[in-house]
Amino acid sequence: MSGPFHKLLRDFRLNEWFEAADGCEVCGAKYKVRVTHVCENGNFGDVEWAITHKPDCPERFAEDMDEEEVTESDWDNAGWEFMPEPFTFRGKQYYPLKSRANIGPCLECGRLIIGVPLILFIDKGRKGELDFCWSCVRRLGIMEMIKR
Image 1 (cartoon, rainbow, N blue to C red):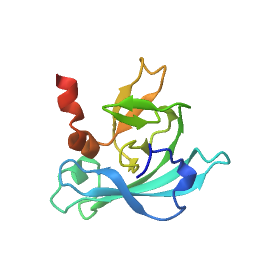
Image 2: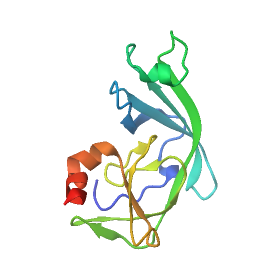
Image 3: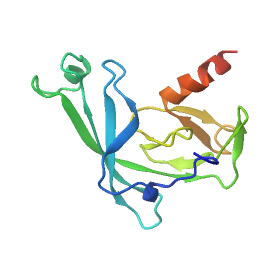
């Protein structure tokens, strides 16, 4: 990807399934997601997500799924707005998020995060936030940096 991530929800193809940034922490299954509606400004809309857990994954029982079910799915709100100016973090420029719905992007890999991202608030959130999926957090060594 050249330059900082600056894609809006409208830039994702409608009604086409793609891999999300995260998955089940227990069995390793990946979420898939599809954008089903985008509002007029292109920033916000609706998505459907699904995850097919491995048959022996205890998470599928924790989610009140039937014994035979292995696929969990739901609908949610997605979208975000960017701050006007990029912010440099660890030598790389990112456009911070000014606001976001329940589902938003990882600013490093650009994939949508279904679960909980690592959120780094800039100036207590007044200058936006940097959201990262946990795969990118590990790859970039962000937790090790924070622990120092």
